[in-house]
Amino acid sequence: MIIVTGATGKLGRQVVEGLLTRMPADRIGISVRDPQKAKAFADRGVRVRQGSFTDPDSLAHAFEGASQVLIVSVDKMGEECVRQHRAAIDGAVAAGARRILYTSQMGAGPASHFQACRDHAATEDALRASGVAFTSLRNGFYAASAMQFAAQGLESGEIALPADGPVTWTTHADLADAAAAILSDEGCFDGPTPPLTAGQALTFADIAGIAAEITGRTITRTTAPDAEFREQLMGHGAPADAADQLLGIFAAARAGEFTAVDPTLATLLGREPVTMSTVLRERLADG
Image 1 (cartoon, rainbow, N blue to C red):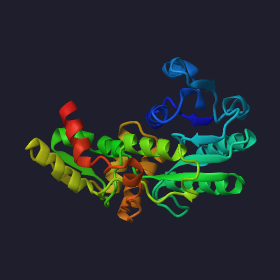
Image 2: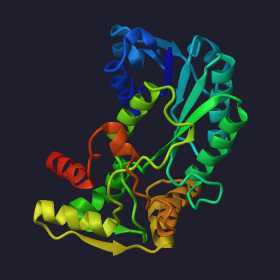
Image 3: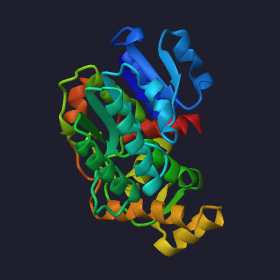
């Protein structure tokens, strides 16, 4: 029994879809906060149980019979994030799982400029201390995040963001396929994987250039000072700590934390990963 947490989220849902193409539904279980949202999976024969990282007692039932548990990282940062991940790890160990998988990130490390990468490193330390075999999926930075950052600029013709550095933007769909492939092969990867990345590291200037080529419009990249960008975020309602965490992404990119390009993802997929050019074409066609 393979258990997937967060299976109603963007990544977890696609991991379950990938598993359903590889194995019978009755070998797949999901742990979700709201089982009603997972009814479509239950109708297809997937075991659906309520489980929450903030309610450790619920995980005993949700993870029951697990041979492997995929812990999809929570959308939190700081101590609360790591606390929830530790609860999930403890739940998987108590359930007797032989292997724990975790959605980490390229650049994970205690000295990262980006809080989430420091949280991933702390979670990986907890995995090492668990005594159970683990695989930490060092996922490339989500291409969807690049689209969120660039959305306004793609419309206005001016992408105004803090100074950045090259990032290997990678799609949720490719990373979900890779996770499903790794779950399907229990001997595949011990500890952190190599960076699971698309084939190119791109700056927002590169993205502006690709978008201009696709649309035939002038799209420029301008640099917004960090302090000014922080004020803009807070002016739109972002709390100060959230604004600082977003700025951390740009600081980490400037420091080269997300520049790695690695062939491992392509090998797992059996094809080249989706390019940012394709992501942009789909986004601009939708827009």
